[in-house]
Image (cartoon, rainbow, N blue to C red; front, side, top):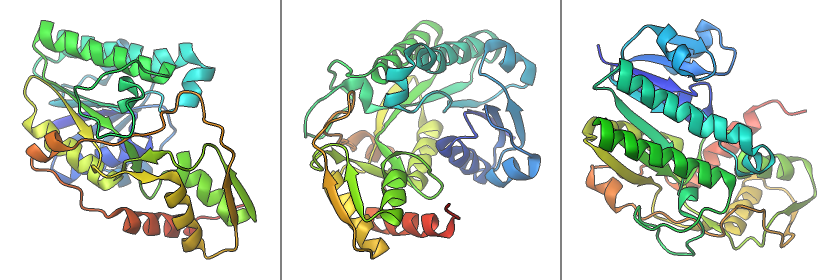
Length: 305
């Protein structure tokens, strides 16, 4: 049986990736932070869970060889990287080189998949972003992701490791309890007047988590050498349109406005060119508006204080 290690498997993306590999017949191991009982992690397709910081020594202690390692561990927040740049570096960069060294020294032949971000490319404007377009990152988060990508390139070129990078745009879906959709649902659900950062004209490319993990699995099976692809749907939607659609789904009389203040480190536009993703036989299956309806239903089914 083929085996995969998913770092950060306790997190939103990691647990969904674990479930996807299990569905396709893999033995799935997970490592990262999060207290999980066996009956909880097996629900996500995880056969063995190792609660630990991602270090070379911790990987040795698992005492298992893997066909694929998917590195979802690390920080996922621009704001966190600005407030805690050193810790963000440790989570993003140090964990990445620990995994790459482990593959080089202990698990040759293992493929490495790194979910990254278009934040590595900086503020490129309201245009479809190809994988080759590069500007200066505008946040510590983006710089650290770029350093991690450079380490991946170095290990692939120097040590002949198959490494694939997916620059995910805005992943969403049932179970996500942070970022814009979660924040917007909480505010619309409980307030009569809601104020958001920015102007509302900022745009994002949304990809449902089920499409995101399907893309990663397909990519892992075809990976050869060093490759980078975008993980988005190729469509752009303004924040104003998103939050007003959520308001309609809640069917509440809520006043929505924007304060005109742009958060530091957040580009105004993210829009994926998905040509390379389509070339491996992938296409999105979850319509954004259907995905948002499902998310609001998920939110409503939760108990809220």
